[in-house]
Length: 55
Image (cartoon, rainbow, N blue to C red):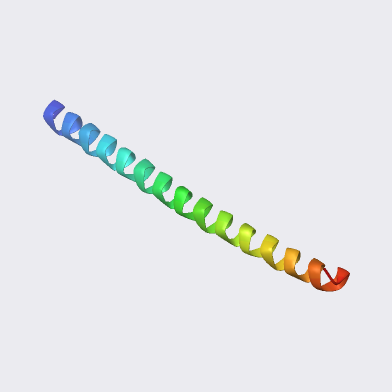
């Protein structure tokens, strides 16, 4: 019984670490996409502003 509990604990810890790793990977991926999207929007705004001001 104790062996079963310890193996369950180890499996739970492995699952937790795997979940946290995948969560971090997903978060960094989302962050990269967000930064790329923000820079794209800024470039678009910059171009439209230059068109409006006739620069």
